Length: 286
Image 1: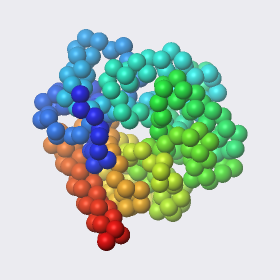
Image 2 (image 1 turned 45 degrees about the vertical axis):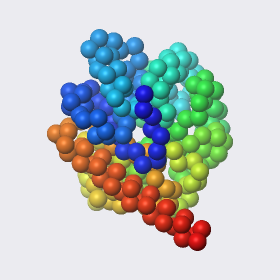
Image 3 (image 1 turned 90 degrees about the vertical axis):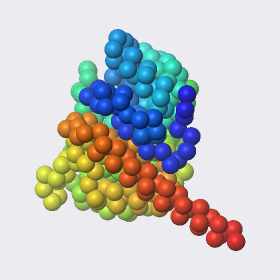
Image 4 (image 1 turned 135 degrees about the horizontal axis):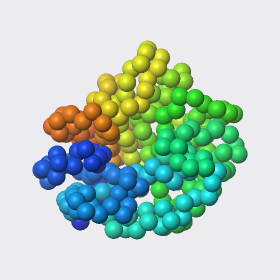
């Protein structure tokens, strides 16, 4: 089975609504597919067979939805065990979860923001370390979009950096979420990037959003990537280097060739910035 063995990798989110198109896709059309293991664990029949077919042709990354890293209830050890089995079965190289909570006496079916406090840092970091121990691997956590920000004793960037250090984990940098948050909460996205630790960036996500107003953006994953998000991704590549980058699209699916045009744009950007980095290294060595 192929692996995501190069930073210059452009992937696409595997959604059931896209299955017929993905199955008909040429080998090499994308470099990897990303799934939410929570939605596939224990799935058999036609869907299970289709996932097996795709995993034989494309490397698989996994992006969890339900561990509720910021929750107060005990971690779901059965889900963790089954997630580890899923990761091992599909040779998952990149595994990530959301820096949020999703349960409170039951599933909330949303990614809720964690209070930006010192107590929350200690709580979340301990749960991430426990997850890494059970899964037997280092994970990455994703910065999430949020619209209400309860109990902000710290700035978002200080909270994220503290969690990464305390948990000794990596960051899946969602560039669209960063852009949306920067507009909605009035901070400088470039300044945010400048304070992230270079050695913690594992991979990137990009997606589309909805412009509700000039100062209100809604993270939908239901539209093409906007120009400001492409620009911010370019800034991330310059600052942190090229990493595997995933295009997320959850609904309003266009024809596959339009999604492949966006993943193709990712590849083009990755090659340009990888070439630039090589030239810079050669110049320094000369």
